[in-house]
Image (tube, rainbow, N blue to C red):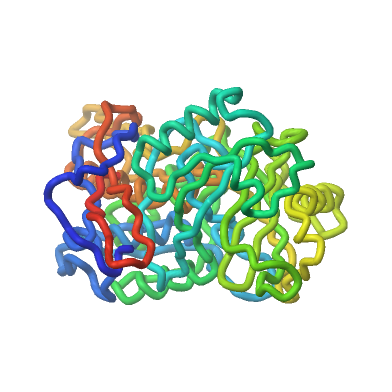
Length: 445
């Protein structure tokens, strides 16, 4: 819990070793209290000579990048066509997200490389809860899931245990076919509350918000944007819009939807833990996803439909009916659940990418004339998009790499494609649960 961390300059005993992308010659980890702060002012205040970063995109990826860059002493402007809202109208994908952390790959929207999470404070809508994963056969019969479980168990994630007793403990109907299970503690995020908190935090640190729709290839309008916003670097955090803004034809939508029901203990025993069956282990390759959003709302999901752009799902849509029927067959007490009267169904488009996430500098260059001789000039654009269903979990790790890439741009270093290095140490895995015991959160993300 970063509201009361203990710091250490030495890597703690319980330190997860993982593979991450390395894109920058600079390799500076995020360390809360040194270059990242929860205070309502920058960890390192900017001055008149500080560089300005223009971030395009106001979702969780853009806001976390703004936070990290503000604390490193930059001026930051965030441009977005829309912002987090809290009405019954369509909300941002960052708000629709299930936002249950799990050891990658995630249940909804997988990725092939393992990155990391930096947990947010409870005041930002984050709670530590038991997260349970169920399987229709012994986990050893599912190689990918068994590998994921072994990595989770060996990493030191707090609260890990494997037991089929969880099926009875949580009231799972044995007729659904679950025969094996494991659980661990993980952050669960109330995304509405957290997005509001993030916006207030970066505002207090000095961000400038600007509402505008930027269309077309960023590379073709780079010089105009740098000039108009007096910026030194442009950071693309536009998610699915990178299809046009970055000219990336590998981007595609992964449509998702969740039903929201009242979870106050009145209509069924209050669900306090997350319960899930991943697509590759589920009946008919469909997900069961039951996650407490906050103290009174429970999310029921889910669907992952690649290539679907329309947001026209209703409670009467066949896939939504099947989704609810699966959850009720899995956890029969949900048959008595009441819909959230304010926002009964949430749907959005996860920003997926065929290859993997893109966290790298723009590789296209411009040919300039220098005293009659052609010279290649590097772009000052950095990309951070394509997180699929893992935007919240990967936001800090990607932002740390982006901050390093900003240094590269400002020092006029050549751009290169992201590549995977040797294993490096990341965040201490003894996740705090509200008790006095709280391990160091020094991180290499």
